[in-house]
Length: 71
Picture 1 (cartoon, rainbow, N blue to C red):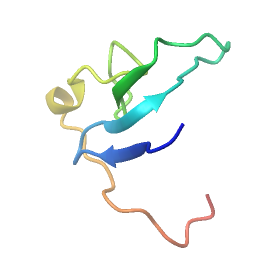
Picture 2 (spheres, rainbow, N blue to C red):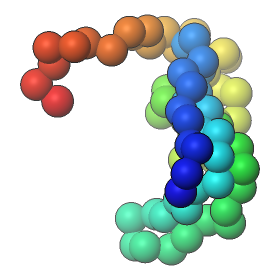
Picture 3 (spheres, rainbow, N blue to C red):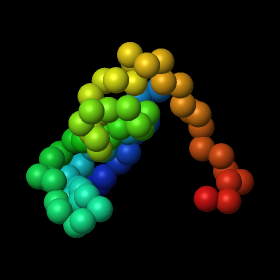
Picture 4 (cartoon, rainbow, N blue to C red):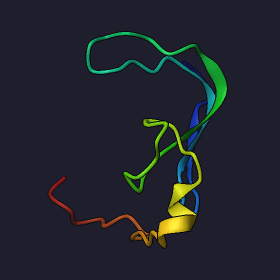
């Protein structure tokens, strides 16, 4: 898994660029893709993938990482 990046779209999904293996909670793998848009608003009907619902519900996200976060 080389050269993988994750970009955050303002008030939108996480964009994963680079081929990655994505598995559900039971270990079932989704087909590998070069680019994934992962839901961050929690309202997508195609979770874990983004379906654009964030724009319909007015999702607003924190835009910056918190360097001193305990997480």
